[in-house]
Image (cartoon, rainbow, N blue to C red; front, side, top):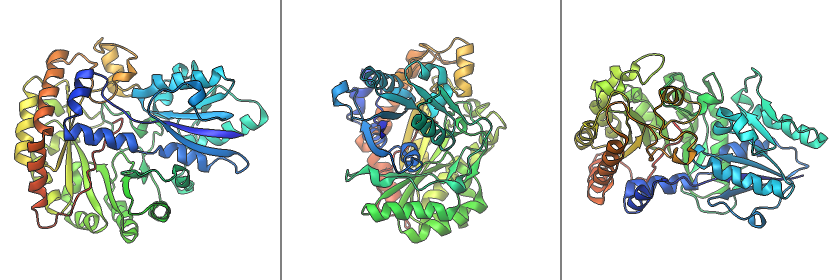
Length: 444
């Protein structure tokens, strides 16, 4: 069989006003270009689990194409962000009209498998490393099933295959992804990341992480790596082992973690020496009322708020840039949150800032809650799940106030002058290194 791995790449704001503004603002443009060029690690991983007798190719589609322009194959395996789910459905239908079988997996399909099945021949629910080998065997036997579920089975990341980075070809990319862990011990109301795929937090052996990095280094000159994790440094003991393994590879890298990393100067030093360029940290909001109730298991983040400014200073003093991430539209925040974020950023001076709006991703606790409360403006408007587009009725302001406040704050924070001043302030620090822009963020 010829199997085409197809990634629906490139996420842009759906609102034309945001799109127009974003074209002229460095912060928006940086993030959009980053997300657009990220390869699909999930597809490269299941490609490695595909028996050698099958021909596997990898493709990225930014625009829905005519059926005769799609890569020719016997089976199309498609992965997508929620924001491009409808585009993925359209591509699948084009393939099916030609008699080509189509399959889908990932976060959106796991959250809404029956919706996905309306457009695909089969759906992998949960971890692909479990469902994909079964699906391929059934394809070989001509017995394709509708759904492939883990059924309580857990995939051990110690058994993870080497992703098929060689399938990416010569295209110049601003980063490559490597996963060091899956899941997260915390549960945030708005999060729809890898906790959907596995109920357990688990880690990949550091030596295996280093081997994957070396495989990328062998193929591409001076690669920049993103650790595709939800919270890389939540386990401090394991974090040291990871840094000891990553350091000798000589790469530069970016990841996401929580603010607790600032409390461990020894670890920060190891991270800097191991090539860490930037950390995206979810501060969510600088207000005490806004952060209340964001975490479903405990209110840990609310206890850290008075440490935020000191934490940013400690991390950046260690030579690691901070990308401070905020979620606008939280239930505890009203219209004054925009000024609060503006003041916080002016005082903290993080290298980068990422502002997003509260987004009801399917599968997240916030989606179920907001739908139950009748506060989703347009259900199944997946194209609005970009982190920039407003599709909720906030509790303490109108949807229009949220949109207008978001746009105004974005223009102030992402304008050339503001971004230049923040970055210059960081580069003036003794331990700072030249930065590759690393605007991150996914469905979290």
